[in-house]
Image 1 (tube, rainbow, N blue to C red):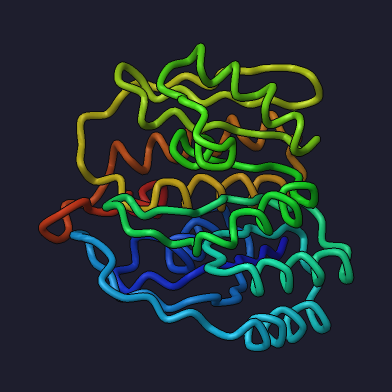
Image 2: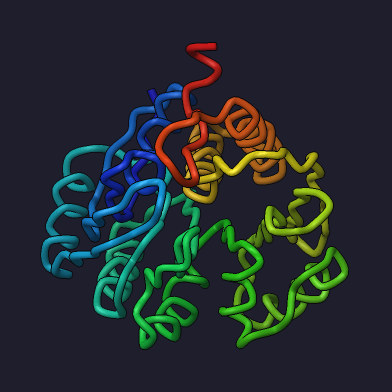
Length: 262
């Protein structure tokens, strides 16, 4: 069985973060492991509190797993501050982790800042070059690219050229916030590939970014190419949204296990 590690924050409501990652790993029949970077108090209505763990705690968690278990892929999610980012980057290089998928989590669905302001530079300089695949949504891509406006497919294609100045990694710009559809754009090996999907009429999209990036990491661990890993993950997340769960009073979660229980 392939083994995938998530380095991310915990979501008390179970729809995003570590909890979403582990459910997604299970759905892809890979063995999931976790390193928790922060504990959040949140539900479908939003995030009310964040407590960030120390960089030492994050370091010790990674070391404990890496020194005992072979890791076939790594998904990186919420890293709250520069110190944790630098620690994770150092250990990625030290242990020579492979199949790294970076979801640059900066803001929650409900608008809560999840990344400290001084950490953006560290994220761009230290982690972007180490990732195999980067999965920003339109808002995260804009933030990374110093406020570049990204509201259309044409804007997404233009943003790819700006990303190329920062990293040679594959970049998947997620178009879930587009008005008319939910197309994603993959820039990989000097090629652009669109992954189209219909816009599903639902508010239950909590944790979609975490879920998609975890699905990509799972697929890479299973030996799929980057393009096929993204294709399969796009199909999976579309199904998870289509079968989303009406839980809570706000933005409910996607259904990570829909293939197993529907």
